[in-house]
Length: 257
Image (cartoon, rainbow, N blue to C red; front, top):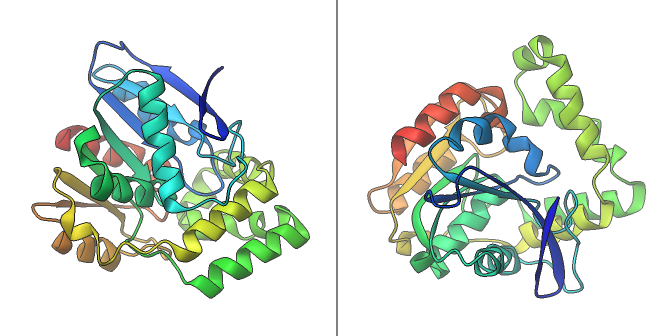
């Protein structure tokens, strides 16, 4: 296990592949950890130095001592790169990680080669919805959100065909730190880049899940129109498309990079 100190938090990360290769950072979704990228790292490490990390409040990373904001999540990535003396990297984030990537594209484009944002939007959900989720988790714990997550994350067919994979993801969600999860819900409640992403200057790929009820294909199409020259790929999956449609996801990612 490897850790770096970034401002007020200890971030857990994993490195795969030759450090002399171009770096690709992978950023997890809300309620998951860096293991969600296992199917990507095994393939991508042949061509890239793959750097995965647990977003603050998730996995083995600390939750920190300050309120979590989208800017704070983005600056964690910059701190990780700085700690490892990496000047520029490709970045791929999914859901919450995709919002983090958008923030980087707007505010720290000089640190990016190419940007991939998957199953995300410039504005995810509503303030009231995230505030209610945060309050629920603080009051009742992670079981209260884990029970219904399979239907948000995966299609019914995938749930039926891959019960072990689904069970592992839900178990991981139950094991997350409730306050860390709630703090990231607080960040998502106020995260809104709809008026900012048109400024992203780096080559960008938007990946959508054809059956995603959380961040829809329409959300991805809108982002694609806002970001100059952005490419769009739609894969046959719900919200965690890198897991449900790993081969198609990997193909789109590698083709773009």
